[in-house]
Image (cartoon, rainbow, N blue to C red; front, side, top):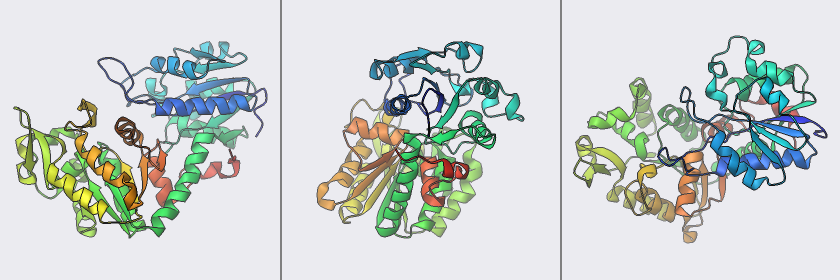
Length: 401
């Protein structure tokens, strides 16, 4: 790979959680990963780096402007500029020696996820005008078939342009291979929560099939949905998911197929309108779920404590951690206790954390996983289907960093 004098277009993932009231970031881990990508490019004598990333979901139009000062703080010797636009001539005019140009949110234009002709998109046309171009694909969460993260680099590769994996993605690919081997050789526990129901419902059965020594402990919205799949009355908690009722049948099938290997909460901490109370599953309908309850916390802790030298895989949160003011409050309490047991050195467990929410939680709790990745679904798919899943065309282009 030769970056000497090249203008590097770096597709990264700096999508970061932030407080909508204050604008402060809850976690900057992904921004620091992008800093690593930029440093890698300039260490290999790149002339400039154009940084592209999404922020938030489709249609939200969240900006990347606030990410720039953090990047500049960690790159004091470079000129970090915010383009203010996603694509166009203004970006090309900013190209300069030692310049870092941060584009606006790639999802600010519908063409990112809805393009019939890739070569007619504004982003593709702009990239093709960049002189001495090298495309550095370095977004670990690369399972999404969006324009900038997948279709453009693949098209450029087919056209003969230099398209390389960056250090963060390459490390993630290598790590997926390592994790797969660990899970094949050890007893393992998957502590799963979070709000991305389609992802969890797709990934969990595949993980349980591939790794017969794995058991799952569920929390958060994921566990509430599984309660609903079993016919439980969850009351207004149904409002926490949108159109996912169509997934109920697959959830029921999963529970039946893996009976005994999926652990569900026996109680929850709920807000019943008057405050936080502990409620058994049969009373889920009486309030909004905030966290797993004390009986469940003890059950999960005892399960982890009874095992030795196991692998503990964490993805998502067991509660509504964003709203918890401290680790002792409902929302974070479940994770604080259960994760503490997982990290207890006397058990000899290997703790692995995947996904942005998991890493944000670990940082707030002060835990450092033995193995981690900022990507969630993409990483699991690489573990399940092979390290280059979805990126097979990049395999011969891999670089060792």
